[in-house]
Length: 143
Image (cartoon, rainbow, N blue to C red; front, side):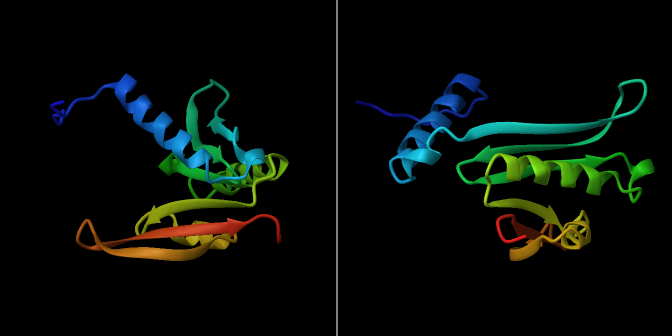
């Protein structure tokens, strides 16, 4: 058998890699967590239905992971991010998640997450040469 490395954008092959890793991981997690995967997306829309912000996240096993939180610049610091985050935390609790994890860069939303009860558990220096990449977590079961 000859194997070769291919560099291409291929959704079918990408899904195969994700599915195989998921299948491998399942053998190590408790059975009751096995089917726990769900995308959770919340959108902030204006009266015209235009998206002004939102959170893209997913539940995986016993946690919820935030991938993207964005609010249009002209309405930042108006409380909408906190409202979205609060709604997401309610959903995570309803779905019996133990914690939420998220990452952010030093010029993005570190103080916002800290203000909302998230704690830094790790960081990387020299990101984009001048910045830090922070990893945060909020325990839900003890709050």
